[in-house]
Every structure is written in C-alpha cells, then in structure tokens.
Amino acid sequence: MPVVITRAKNDSQSFAELLLKASVKAEDLFYFPCLDFVNPDDDFKALDEAIRKNQEFDWLVFLSKRAADSFFSRVLDLGGHFFHLAQHLKIAVVGPATKEFIENNVNFPVDFIPGEFNSDSFAKEFKLKCTDDSNYLNPLKLLLPRTSIADDKLIEDLEESKKIEVAQVDAYKTVKPNVSDDLTEKLKSLFAKMKASEKSLKLSFTSSQCVRNFFETVNNNFDLKEFIGNIEFYSIGPKVTATLGEEIYKIVSEPDFKLTIFQSQESTLESLVEKIIESQSLPV
Image 1 (cartoon, rainbow, N blue to C red):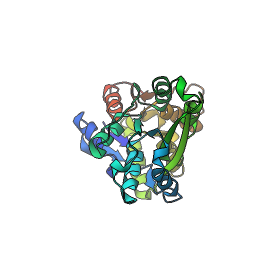
Image 2 (cartoon, rainbow, N blue to C red):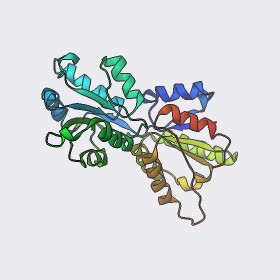
Image 3 (spheres, one colour):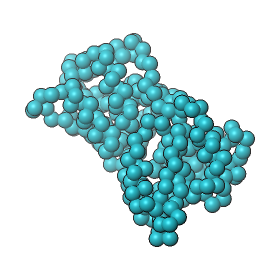
C-alpha cells in the first residue's frame, strides 16, 4: 500500500509513525516535499514588536504547532521567559497537536480548543463561548501569529460581530522547496508502476499550499493526467479538499470524470491515517 507524503521526511515524523503503527510498511512511504518553512520577510520584526506589547492583548491564537513554536522561541530569543508574558493572557488553539505542544513543551494552559479542529469551527465556537455583551464597547484583542500566506477568512469571521479585534503577525513563511529532478523522476516511475499493475497509489495532503505546490512541481515535469485513474487522493480537511478539487479539474476536463477525494473526519493526522487505512480496499 504505497503512500505518498507531500512533506519532507524530517517534517513528517508524526505522520509516518502513525502510518507505521497502522501497518503501513516503511518501504511503502514515499516522501515528496511540497512545503518548506523559512523566516518571515521582515525577519520577525512584527512578531517581536507584538511580543513586547503582549500585555495589550487578551488572547494568543495559534493555528498550528509551528506558529506556537515560532512565537515562544522568539520570546526566549528576545531575552525573556515564558512567565514574562502578561498574566491575563489566554491561549486558544485549533487542534490537539498544538494544544499538546503548548501544555507539555511550554507548560502553559490552553484555555480554548474547538470541538471540531478547523478554522471555521474555531471562529464559530470562539465567538459563542468567549465573548459576551460586555465586550461590545471594549472588543477582545487577539494576537494571531501565523504563516505569511494565510487567507483572511478566519480574521473576517472573528471580527464580524465587532466584539473581536485581531492583530495578525507573520511568525514564519511557507515556500515551495526545490525538488530534485531525480526525486521527481522516481515519483513518475512510482505512478507508472502502479498504473501497470492496475493498483492505486495513495496521495496525501495536509495543507492547501502543499496541494498547489505539488501540482505546480509535477505539472512542470510530467503529465499527471496519464496516471490520474490510479491515484487515491487523501485530504486532511474541507479546505484542502476544495483546493484538491480545483487543481485536479485543471488537468482533467472529461465530462464523465468522477473525482473521489477521501477526506478525514477530523483535521488531524490521526484521522487522516484512519481514512487512509479504512479506504484501502475502496475504488478511486
């Protein structure tokens, strides 16, 4: 059961471990990195300024473990300690991996996590549970450290009620890595092997940016359309699924083409692995 992981091997340890525990063989894991992480363009200037003024905010909001790691690392780099943050600050996260990192590695409590681990549920539940009428004249001030290329829908949803103000700062930047011709050729050979054996290759995605970068890289090197019938697409959430659909239909225009994307029930690696395992006997 070959599985393509669209992240670098050193950035996919948790995902790989879950797959191995679920009986996927190590030799069946193929790493094709579609995302890399670098410092933001301003070299943390905005993030550092926000950290120095952290007492002006009511909540810290982290959408990923990487955002939390970047934030708290900068606190230390600036010469402070975690307990120098304002005592009234509360922390909200979208998913359990981020919650676990903050509670176990930073030793801070997490005050809010949504019932469903995605940004839409976060906005809806946060507004319902963490604001009240008294905040109307004095809106809650949220600090949101995140990637520099994230869309603004979450901020728009949170600020819609006028009870919340969000300050977004770049905590890191995501870029498309340079993938070697040799690795791209190996991926093409794997596609061809699965097509020849009339089997399906499982192609997994954990972010919309991974999807876009994958299709850009592959389309610049070979025709993915040739192998589309032998690919099972796996997505970690609805936004990734939507991006996958957009990219696939750019290269497949046949009116009778039926696209199936296996989407995890929750936006977690655990749920994505469960979907990969349970769908292994299903047709594309």
